[in-house]
Image (cartoon, rainbow over all chains, first blue to last red; front, side, top):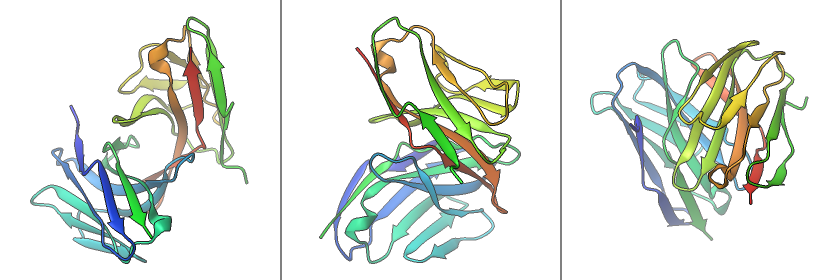
Length: 112
Length: 114
C-alpha cells in the first residue's frame, strides 16, 4: 500500500518555468513533510520541509504549499534553472517515528 | 567531516554469492537505514536500526541481513545474491532538525548481480 502518492513521474520544463510536483497522503498521523532532491549518481538530500500547521513555506526559489483538509502538498520551483534538473521525492513522517515514507519520485528536466 | 560513507561504491557479483555492503557514519546518530532504489519504485526501505543491537524490518527485507554492533556501522549482507537484487543501495542516518527528522544519505553502492 503506497502511503504517499506522487505525481507526475517525469516533468520537462523550459528554463524560467515553474514546475509543480504534487503529493497526496492518507494517514492523518503524518506531521512532517519533507522534500528531497537527488542528482544523478548522488544520494538524496533534504531540500525543504513543512509541518501541517502552516500552509506555505518558501526557501529561495523553492516553495511547499500544504493543504491539510485535502491531505495534499506540492513543491513549486520558481524561475527554474537547468541546474535544478534532478529527481525530487516527497516524504512524510508520523509523529514519534524516524521512518520516512517516500513517494516514488519525479524526474525533473529543465531545458536551457 | 566525512558524514556517511558507503563501500564499495560499485560491486559486481555472481548469483548465489554472499556480499556485504558497508555503511559508516561519523555523527553518532541513533537511527540508521538501508534503502534500495530501482526505476519506477523510488526508495524502498530494507531494514532500519534504532540503536546498536536494535534492528527491524522495512518494506522489502527478504534476502537481506543486517547487524549493528557499533553505533557508527550498519552493514547490509545479501546472503545469497539474486539478479532481482541488482540495484543501487543507499544507507542513511537521521537527526532532529528542530521541526522534524532529516535523513542524511550516503553516496550509494551500485550492485550488479550476474
